[in-house]
Amino acid sequence: MLLDELLGHFGFNQEKTLHQLVFLEVPAKVVGAELIYWGQASWWPPKVSFKLRRKTIGDLKVGTQYELKYQFPFSFSSELEVTRYVPDRVIEHTFIKGALRGQETILVEERYNGTKISYTLKYRIKGLGRKILWSLLLGRLHSANIKMILMSLKEHILKMQGDTTKS
Image 1: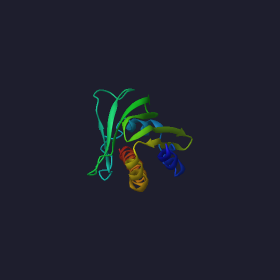
Image 2 (image 1 turned 45 degrees about the horizontal axis):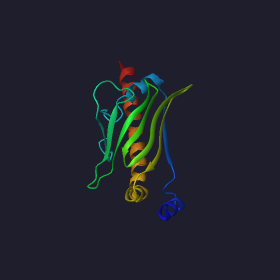
Image 3 (image 1 turned 60 degrees about the vertical axis):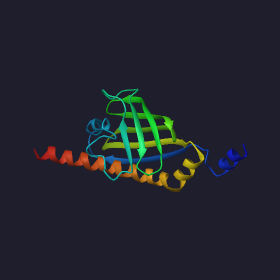
Image 4 (image 1 turned 90 degrees about the vertical axis):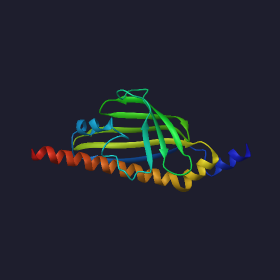
């Protein structure tokens, strides 16, 4: 009980939110079509420090499961499941086992001048050692990885758009 109070005082037990976005001047349907490849796409940057491995087969749908695993000598992994899926618009993953608890949402929103892609991670870390590791290293690394992923997706889509306009 005392440890929980102490951790709470320093913010270790609070739910946290990571939010990032990118904007593209292309139609939402072009962006949304790439969402189903989240974690497995050819545009997924090779330097991302975690892997997202699909554990179930078949089409993407509610119930599809993944394993997120950081590539370090120590274990930091979680299992997640698609809990909301609207084709070309939203994928929501819920962390069901492992280090992370919470939801990750990738949202594609049509705007009058293009498309906004929002990534939101609402989470808690399970385990004292993992909480410390996340606060010292992995939290910032995860944020940098998501930024890299969104920029890679943006570059991929803009390259695709450039290739189709040249035809």
